[in-house]
Length: 146
Image (cartoon, rainbow, N blue to C red):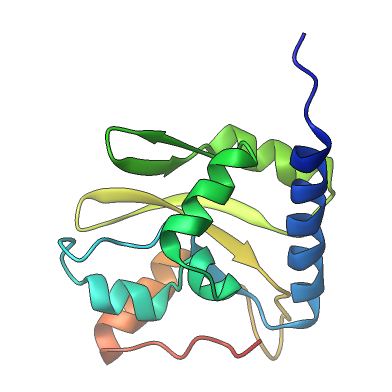
């Protein structure tokens, strides 16, 4: 039986604590892995759905490797992919007010995490689709400040 290392456990706890701090901020959807420059509309995607690396103010490569080490992503053939079930388990394990969903832009399905707090009257809940439609219609989207 594999027992998780203390670094694995404490790393997951630090990530959970970071997400909990965001509860005082307006909610938004963040892309777990940043789009690559060859994806159509990658600049609009990056500005509308900042990646976790942008949220953490860390290098994308470092963030992806961190997610692999924490069991939340895998690496294969030069690319990183989030593990949906692992994220769902992580959210449940730490009782986080977060949601992971997949959403397709330009035929490419990617994973997004909703972090922060929605407020029915002042900041009503939005789906990634609603955010994306607004961004495409207006040419940009104002991401809530943390």
